[in-house]
Image 1: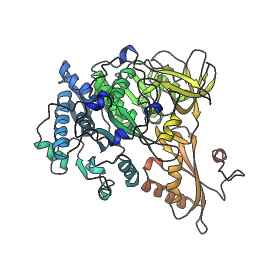
Image 2 (image 1 turned 180 degrees about the vertical axis):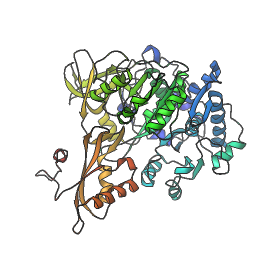
Image 3 (image 1 turned 120 degrees about the vertical axis):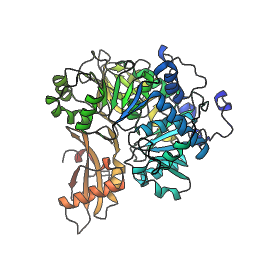
Image 4 (image 1 turned 90 degrees about the horizontal axis):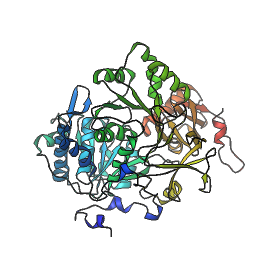
Length: 545
């Protein structure tokens, strides 16, 4: 038993930790960079990010803006301490236990996430767009007993209270101030703050995020307190964020891009964060002007939507633009540069790696490249035999650094992602003679649309459950605004008409079955699916019909 494990409290719930892959299957975790040489002893991420900021004199600074609300660092800490009291005393949450968080971006979601980590539990944030069957998979996978949920999106969770694990769904409102409408709000009004926190080992799991897989079954990725802190300290290198800057991210905190950009990075840099419950050009531009946002973290889809609005708007404070989640494309980069005079810094990362691991600087690498390895990481191109390909070659991206893939309870996919100590993505890259990386495409059938990873088999199952569908196949096709969209190629049962009404009915059925963003925007009806002699669907043909 390791010293960290020996120090765990007697009531520690070790189920999630027991799902970690065997250590020989882990990637190489490299903390040797000067900015990553933290004390590997006890570390609680919530305390390292929030309590330390208040202790350093930032208590009166605004940490979170949302609508008309503005929470200072001190106010956020007070709310986190009160939620910690409720978690420990009322909900009996134990260290090591997974707690589901389900909400749109809001101050209360941020506070709940930090409070869960503060009491030594594991934060599992889930998109409010997920349906009951998707949430049931997460609950069963991690044996989740306790969920904190925004009241407006609780309906999909309540049916799960009858399953073997989920015991409570405790609701809150976005600002935690409507005690009559939500149980958590009411409990907070009476709760005394907990000044202390649970001492956790640096390598204890702090959060689990779910990443879509080619089989359609989401993959649970575990990240430790130390991993997440290191991700913050690596992210600051390509384009530094100074204390007092105002950041805004358009992604949901259920995803690592949204979690880090909306919460972890601003806390670590002593900046402010503007939370948007939903993203429209009007709301985003209004927030930029109102809060004098200096740094925007977003995806190409949002940038496309913003472009037409820039002719009549000035954004004098906004000078730092970060794009990730899908390929940006040179045309959009140049159009944005012409409209604003600023460069977009396009990076590459993944749920397994937490943060961007490839990135240009603000002034350097050629347009279209995703730059070089972020300081703290090592990147290379690998061939099919895991041999390093010299610059000028093409192959799979290999990454080593302070973060990496650890799938819970999924050794097969762990072996596929981690090879010879490298995190090996399904993404194909080229590296030029100057060491810059260029994205080529994906090996698997994950469809990246508007920054969301959509697994084709999951969409196929949802479509196939519609009574008019005999068989179907789903592929991703290029789209100017979204990067890719989901195309469904469908063979109908006898008696059903291949028409717009049928396509619409199938689309609505998918939206009601799985998260709405996964529905097929492009529906094609076929007499039969093209197949090889062995019976496999020739998906490449479906992309060109």
